[in-house]
Image 1 (cartoon, rainbow, N blue to C red):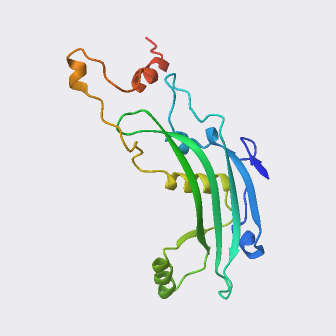
Image 2 (image 1 turned 60 degrees about the horizontal axis):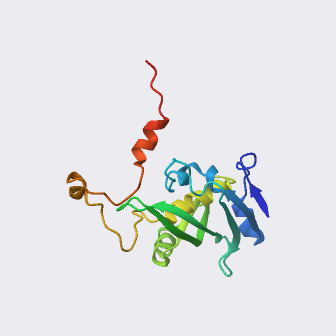
Length: 190
């Protein structure tokens, strides 16, 4: 198993060779080093990422479709239990990410016929254009981001009652405003 960390996060893999050989590449990624994913994850009331120590295992498996020469694909698998922020109540929302998808590979310079493109679209196949080797960390992060809900929210939660707060009542929700946490980290130089 290859472990991708800050020093090896830029390793590259030739997905076309992986598919031709029918081999696989296995590794794990530190969630805290996936900057675009980190933006989607929940923080605690001090502003610290809840999933800061989480490692995300993944597998890239090369596939060659039998009977269709030149039809290569890569299967991407990963699993992780992450914490998102509910868009209704702003509380932490546990989310079990289970990703298992195949992407058809389109090598640079290879043009699919219109009929083949229509057949791929009818199959619901996703095509990954290749211009050379890819960085597995970036590919996995891209697919993980596409696997997250657009508007994460609990099945049963409600928007805090701000009218109650105006009348002196307690507002349900986070104990510390995320804006207050962000502002407390800023330093004003006069």
